[in-house]
Length: 451
Ligand SMILES: N[C@@H](CCOP(=O)(O)O)C(=O)O
Image 1 (spheres, rainbow, N blue to C red):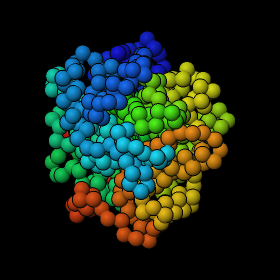
Image 2: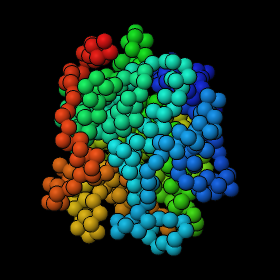
Image 3: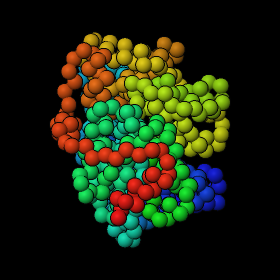
Image 4: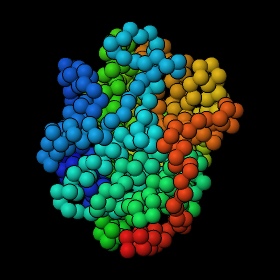
């Protein structure tokens, strides 16, 4: 498998080099040259595996000869040591071996160490980068912009890794209280993970990271690597759980179509899903569910892409006005908006609707949705109102509700208990630096921390 820049197919790289470089030399996003396509028979074999083995098998098609099968199997077994359940609001689990009647499930992708779907890609990326860097002796300074969840997952995945320093940029006041404490307590004094509160929005953080990569001198001086989903090493592993989950759902309900709803911001998760669909994963359609930051939903409606400054919402991890992966989606579909529309249906919701929905589902069933997953589930309800279709519906559950305890307690008027890892983070002293959103401030700070 080779990768090419989305700006120029002649600019190519192998997986390991694309991962460590993050962006192509022309500033483009790396794209797989050819997405492998699996027949239904081959898909059935993948679906019969457990998630870690399925991921390792898929990874053999996307990596290069620096990753043999044994390495990938061990890497995925180590990365994916947690559950990937699909459950109804009343706790019924989708299991192809069990007779099940329900048609709506939440694909809970938040059982990894930092309680968000970002763990899937961060843990693969961390282990893959470590494998490459051990061989070559290279070093990297990782920059990651976060609106809440990516930073924690990347910090956790690279914590203590030799030859790597991680700088997590988050918008001051723009992430939940629990997320902020998680981000700011991963790195202890002297460790390789550094949290930076940026006086600005997530878009400012993301723009700063991009400006750092556009600055050749800075990229070279610090050996920069991005751990955001502009890095193809984030997007590839985000396709694995779509393949596996869709195969489980199809095995349980072979006759039904499958519709998956993705709460979306930077569009990296959707890109992973679209890649899985291109591989032959039996997903009929994606619902792209946005909060008030909805340039992609608008694009699906009128074909005009209008990135704009983000506004703060309850589902803060999706407060993104200029989604990084939009060019990848265009590239996957050769700019054909009709093909994009046949794969994706979009809808957006405001905070009042989100809060009402969280309260209603909690009162009716006892299931507490995180604000992002709530947006995803509302997407399914609206889609079902407008389409008469016999399908299994999976809402992609992006984060554990306890990460948003502060806002959820005001919505359900009850305490939201924290899982042990988050409760422990709340007792630790934060270690964070506040910076203005300028390249000079960022560069000086990195230089001072690297000594
Ligand atoms: N929603 C993200 C924002 C960064 O997006 P990514 O796709 O680059 O990880 C977050 O939670 O930080």
